Image (cartoon, rainbow, N blue to C red; front, side, top):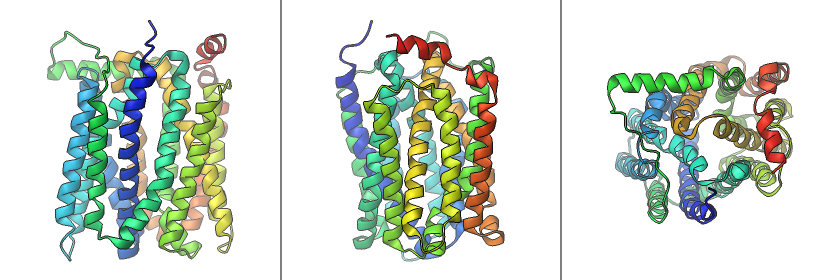
Amino acid sequence: MENKKWLRTYLFIWSGQFISMLTSYAVHFAVIIWLSLEHKSAEILAYAGIAAMLPQAIIGPFVGVFIDRWNRKKVMIFSDAFLALCALIMVFLLQNETVNLNWVYLMLAFRSVGNAFHSPAMQAIAPLIVPEKDLLRVSGINQMLQSGSSIAGPAVGTLAITYLSISNVLYLDVIGAAAAIISLLFVTIPHIKTEARLSINAVVIELKEGFNAVLKNKGLSFLFFYAMMVTFFIMPAAIMFPLLTTGHYGGGKWEMSIIEIVWGIGMLIGGTVLGVFKVKASKVILINAMHLVLGLSFILCGWLPSGWFVGFAAATILSGIALSVFSASFTTILQLEVAPGMLGRVFSLYFSVAVLPSVIGLLFTGLIAERIGVANAFLICGGLVILIGILSFLTPSLMKLGRSKTVEQQNM
C-alpha cells in the first residue's frame, strides 16, 4: 500500500540533511582552501582525499550487512553524532600553531568510517518510504538539495576561513550534525526485521548475497564496472581542481570558491530537471550519455587557455550537470533492480568498488601533477571517460537494464 504520508516524512529528513550537507560542504571547502594555500601540494591534497575515502571503501561491504539488519534511522543518528565528535576533536587538534598533518589525516579517516554507515543508510531508506513511480523524482530532488548546499557551501566556507581560524570553522559541522539528528527524531522510518542471528558466518553469507545480487544481473555488473572505471580516471584529476584554478587559471581563494559554486549550480540544474519534470528517457541511456558529457567537460577544463576563466567555469557547470544526472539515475536503477532488504549491502558495495580503484589513482596524483601537468591530466582523464561512455553504449546487457520497468513506469 502506498504511504500517503511519505512526502511529509521526507520533508523532515530533507530539512535536517540540507543543513547538515550545507555545513559539511562549507567545512570541507574551508579545509581544502586551508590545505591548498598553506601547502600548495597536490600530494597533500591526494593524501587527504585517500584518508577521507579509503576506510569507507574497506569496511563498506561489511557495513552494508549491518545496515540491512539494523534500524536505518538509528544508524543515521549515531553516524551524525560520531561525525560531530570527529569535528570537535579536529577543533582541538587545529588550535595548535604547528599542525601535524598525520593527525588531520587520521581524523579524516574516522569521518570516513562514519560516512560508511550514513551514506548507504540514507540511500537505502527511500524505497521504504517513497512509491516506486516517484523514486527518480526523489533522487532528482536529493540532487537539488546536494546542489543547493554545494552552491552555498563554498561561499560560506570561504567567508568562514577568511574571518575565522580553521579550528573555529569546524564548529559548523557540529551544528549541521545536530540539525540532522533533530530532524530524524520527528519521523518514522520502516524497519525490515530479520530473525537470523548475527555471526561471523552470517556476515560472510549475507555479504556474498550482496555480491550475488549484482553479479547475477549481467547488466548491473557492467553498470558497476563502468562506474568504477569512470571514478578511477576522474578522481585524480578532480582532486586537483583547486590547483588547476590557482595554477593554470591564475586564481586565488575566491576563484576557487566560484568554481565550487558553479559546480553546484550545474548539479542543481541536473537535479531540477529530474525532480520537476517526468523524464521518460531510459536511465541507462542517461548514465551513458553523462559519461560522455563528463569526459568532454574535463577535456575543456584542461584545454582552454589560461585567460579563459569564464570558459573554465562554464565547463565546470557542464560537469556538475553530468554528475547530478548520473548519480540520480544510477541510484534509481539500484533502487528498482535490488530488493529493499539488500539495498544497504549493495549501496555499500558500490561505494567500495567505486572508491578503491580511485584511491590507487590518487596515489599517483602528485606524480601526475609533476610529470605531465595538471591541465594535461584533465585532458587525458576526460578522453578516457569518453571512451568508457562509448563502450557503455556498445554493451547489450547494460542497454537492456531496467527497460521493462521504465515502460511500466511510463504507463502509470
